[in-house]
Length: 143
Image 1 (cartoon, rainbow, N blue to C red):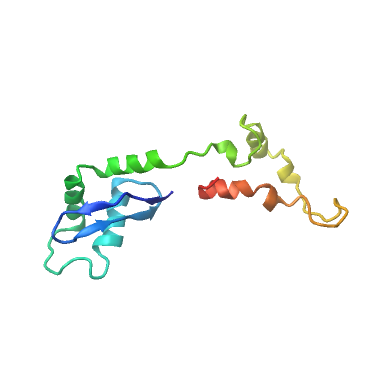
Image 2 (image 1 turned 60 degrees about the vertical axis):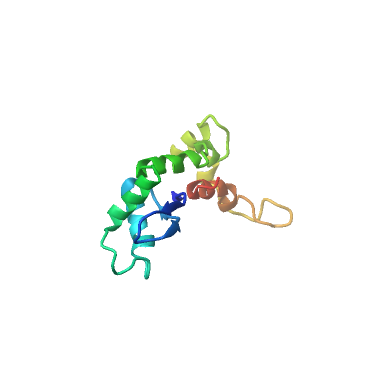
């Protein structure tokens, strides 16, 4: 999951302004802290040398000032994500019959062999990369 968290206004003296976090993987309190630490708090020139607050304490104070917990921030993030049905991967109906047959090794995809002999103009046909292109898009989260 590639995620971008909502901007949160900073209220502590160590860092001023707002920030946006980006990370891959699940949104958890630990991943929010890790992204904040790596991308914001420990970025070159981000904190003054006089700052004695840890990244975790600084983030927790900012979230408290914004009246939100890291878990609630993740809940908001997940609730705004587009939900794509599993059946969109193969795009062969919604009854999951094709998917079941695929996992059992009994679909045309397992037998597909690219050829130029099925068409009059000798253009390729039975090209699995085209026929199953939605699978990659589904995997990448954009189906």
